[in-house]
Amino acid sequence: MRYTDGMKQRLIFLNGTMGVGKTTVCRLLQTKLPANVWLDGDNCWNMRPFVVNAATKAMVLSNIAATLNNFLAARQFDNILFCWVMHEPSIAADILRRLHGEYSLRFFTLVCAPNALRERLAGDVREGKRTPGIFARSADRAAGYANMPSDHIDTTDLSADQTASRIAQILLDEDFDCRTFDRLPDEARAVREQVFVQEQGFAQEFDQIDDCARHLVLYYRKERAGTCRVFEESGHFRIGRVAVLASLRGYGAGGRLLRAAEQTVRLAGGQSVLVDAQLRAQAFYEQSGYTVCSAPFDEEGCPHVRMQKKL
Image (tube, rainbow, N blue to C red; front, side, top):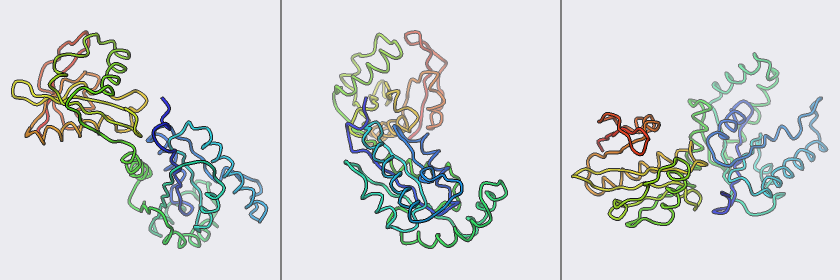
């Protein structure tokens, strides 16, 4: 599956003064976004001795643009991450002018209260990661970010993981879309075939419930990503056949699908919902507010447990 078939590749600029956490946030974003690659601009002029002059400035901009163009040309990445100190809008504009092909741009600037920033830089100095001169350089550039034409995220009271999670949430909200169908659509059938039949070995995957259930399909960048069904049985609303493609697990797809199914139950007047969960997925449902309400039982050789949630 090529993710880039559905939508344009997305170029993500992560900006901010020294010490605000760009590198750490990008490293964490790599674990939270599908199909990504990351370039730290500082790696494009990692010199010793470090000399900043007209020639090295021209060199680093050329190196950055060449690498980003290679990432774009590869067509293997949905998300191309780039972080650097871009304290003037002209720096980002210069890089963008050098890029080729079609892409969408998201530009985030990380900001931080002066005292908190100084504490972070002091920690880096103590650990030998930076020299004391960083305080003046960072303070001198920090003012340039106030009017930066980008989405600002204040990291003062956020950990690096919280900052990365917030950015990932913003981006994934743009990527995922859930739709509901009155009949089993081909996309849902294909996901269930791949997950339950081919991957997990279930033989009795499709049944008469499919004819009366409502089917939800989760799309990632316009391509099928997951599915489930909602139906009523013996006076109880139930969610079943929850499946997410392996390549998209771990990015919140299952949670999005489950929340959409719960909303479908609410709109139908349901106040609680049941799900027959595979034991290996029990923790996932517990994190979503479900509690076990039955003893374990077997379904085609796979241990399950019934779980319930009040809506």
